Image 1: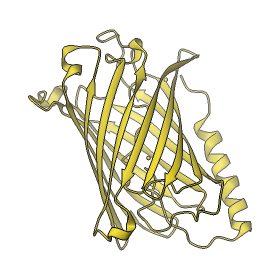
Image 2: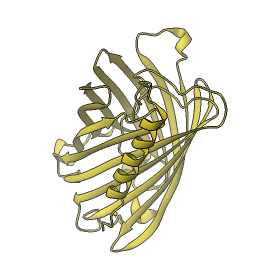
Image 3: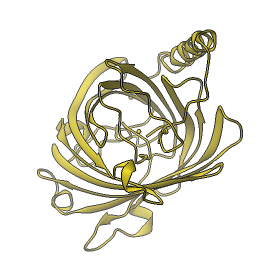
Image 4: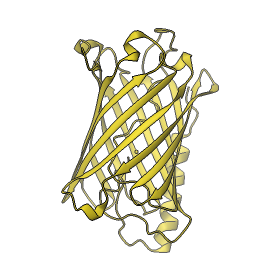
Length: 283
């Protein structure tokens, strides 16, 4: 999912924040008719702390997408995607995440697939000028929702908070183990984000999601996936993370218009402190 820092909220403020978040969850859970675009986020370098579990709900509604079956994959127009992400902190530099992907199409809720994602990062004791981490995501998705049913993603992550300015770059490489011939080669799908903290609670910026095709020969531009999402990050409390935005696809190979929201909640099972500092942002 980068996460936001702690600003010393009182218990009363936390309760008020919880009510605000519940309201936002209800808003984005209103019935909407749900394909690709299951987890739309630029990752930050920080991992979940030990003895801490992070639960995140990714809600993405495609307002304007594909309208016909393509390579055996169902259309995306007026489709809702709901993804549950469960991430467990193992050590100060290692976490493991698990995803459950679902979709709602024509009033029918369907299971899409599951992924597992271990991730490591450069420990803070190394005092690097930027945050660095590496994730590997492997899993299964049903054939009517993706041309490759088994796939692997390798995601290097580099980010930095410089005053109010935050940036993150994810040069992603992914590969299918079943599917079309183009799925069986490594693909280059870079993501990036830049944002500005307008207040201690509100940041606004631009997220970019690309899909260039095989590293050995990228697709023509009109066949690539090129998407831009102006997005807000809200820091209502150390326990919650909120990210939402409206995405625009600028090529024929991209869903043209969508709305996305990420609602996350941390649960601490021990005495590990909640991570501080702006490297800990909505991933």
